[in-house]
Image 1: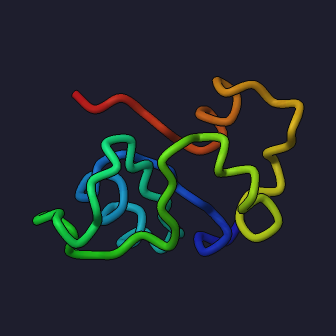
Image 2: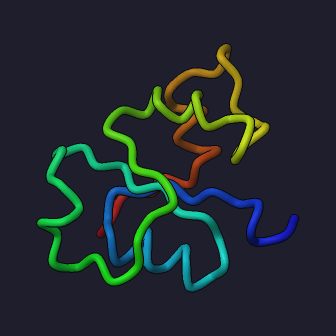
Length: 87
């Protein structure tokens, strides 16, 4: 699969968004704190999309991830979207 067809979802602007963009992936910032992007000091590369709830990914399905469907559980969406805990 071409890198530009992969949507990486993560909550960290450097590790997730910047890392995804440098790898050629599309990036979705999971902004669970609802802090405006303009107030983030670490935003060196901007995400393609920003969400505050994982369910919002369903509205982006036609453009980004044909694997996600309405029958999947939250855990399955997280696995498909590459959300990984940060150490």
